[in-house]
Structures are given as C-alpha cells and as structure tokens.
Length: 138
Image 1 (cartoon, helix red, strand yellow):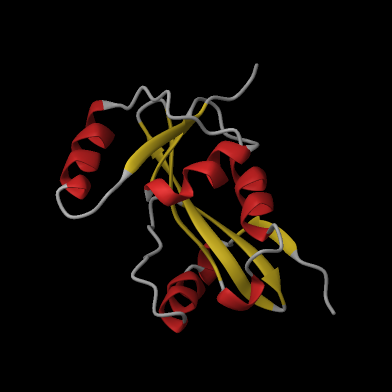
Image 2: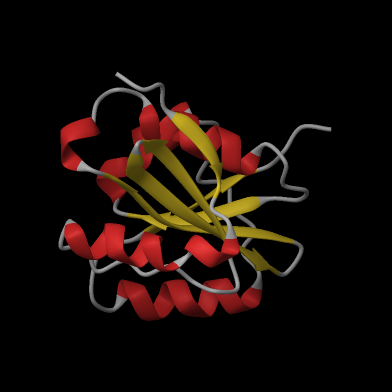
C-alpha cells in the first residue's frame, strides 16, 4: 500500500478537491482564495482549506473519506497545514468536535476578527456551531 502524502494541492489540480468533496456527498467546497491541503494515497483521501483572514487563517472544509477515518489522517493533515501559518488559526465546528480539536491544540479561548464573528453568528442561526482558535507558539 502506498504511503500517505500530505501537501498543498497544486493550483492546476484544484478542481480535484471539489470532485473529492462531491464524490462523498459533502456540501463542502474548495475556495480559490485558500491554500488547499490534501492527504493522498494514490488519490485524495482527505482535504482542508486554509483561508487568509485578518491577521491569521480560517480553517474550513476538513473532510476525510469515510474509509480512512480513525487513522489520525485529519490530525496529521491539520498539523501539516497549520505548521507554517503565522498568527492564529480559527475554525468553526459542531460542538461534538470540540474534544478532537482540543487534542490538536485548539481552544475555546477565541479572539475572532469581526468578519469571522459576523459569519459565525449567521451560521449559528441554522445549526449549533462553536469557534475555536489555535495560537502558534513563538
């Protein structure tokens, strides 16, 4: 079996990210203004988007193909993606995922930029959603 590779998705291959999401009936979409990170094992098995936001980044679209869940792939992908980020990394998630993200160093102690705060308020109108933040250590 091929080893899993974690890397930025090259710009010409960006359509593959949306194809990956669609193939798993996910409503997530890759953003062209983001860094697209993937885990590959011959094909994309996980992905996420890191979008510049204020003085940090906003992590969205973390998805692991169901057949590959429970193997630490999401944790490794997040670690690879945020390791080069300067400033905080924010995300919004279902409260049930709080423990998972806390295990990756994220906390509920959040200082959201105004634009992300506004977006979170809109999202919370339709579903339970919390904000979390990872602050890099100097």
